[in-house]
Length: 525
Image (cartoon, rainbow, N blue to C red; front, side, top):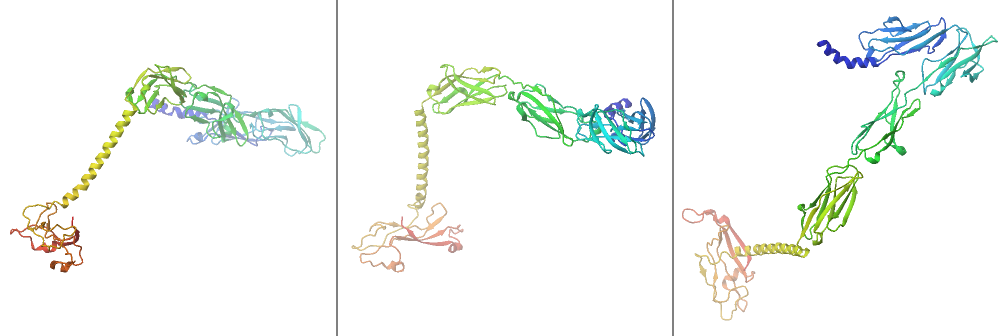
């Protein structure tokens, strides 16, 4: 059981290891050399494989196991197809080596990818020197030089594949030599990308994931690709990015059309475009159309705002909402918007608005109608205005009454000391027959009350004496006026004391003197 559990856990790792293949590189880089020379082969495995404790490399010549080596290199001296393998990996792709016995050979690299610079060499044995040289492709001369030179084709493309050969003269020899024809294959740096759309049939309002699928070869796994996505009429969906994926958060029916993606290798300048893919965005028809009113229930007072609300339970895309009178056949209005709810407002309802209403909704996938709703308008705009005016008058009257109360209350407090029992009344001084009473003072014969120890009930204030001074016709003051000559005749003089708690004898405590405060110039009310 533990063994099976271990295999289940390691299964993804084993799958990852098996998916990688080593790559053989050559030094010198030529696949055709002269007999007796040596070529060094290197088995380049992924880091996952080389990190294992069991490091060994197995070499194959054809279908035969040549040898196992602790290192990743092998010295080759024989013609044939070489492959290598390390622990947990697949066999590498084969590399064909030719050890030639000729005087002149065309030398080419083991692998060339589009965008690379293709270099071909017309080689001779060690110790010999090459003179004028000519290169041919598919039997046609493509390059000639009066001295030994390589043929370089920058930015090689797939069209540069084919059979190449060379012809040259050895120095000191008047005879020319021709190499054997050698087929050179230019490999794709990456295949044409393929666009994938998930989900393949998106719904309106939903998201869509686009993927631009392609793959770099193991020999060029370090190359950097950039991706971009497009729609009909060259609409750019994304700028160039290293990510081969794009998410569109919400698509609508108008987004239906032809989509494609492009991949580009910046260094080599290789640019490829996927085949177009038709994407159709499906919509959801409207259903369960409902008409409601604000205020709710369809009852509204005359002059009030009436709102007809039309909504759908389902439906995607732009929807056209229309409002109608069922009893008169009148169309009240319509609007088109990307929403499942719309409103029609009547600013001030009138009696003529009473009747049966319904609404319709259509998003291009079929029209749907709501049930009829009865709207009742009661009252008249005039009655409503009168009601508002009455409410306003009531508010103003309440404010007025409050102001009157606030005005009367202090006056009642000022006069609250008059007529209390226990006060001692005093008669005003007698006036002469020629003396008329002054303004603000009582007429002769009238009594002016003065109060001793009169408690108002508020604050325990004590009024000691109140007098009213009068001048005679000759303007002479009475005897009691001598110290008050500068005072107006209607000024009331009083001493106000703050009442303190009485002692057991009923007398004020000795601290009363400290509580006495004199108030002058108090005008007679």
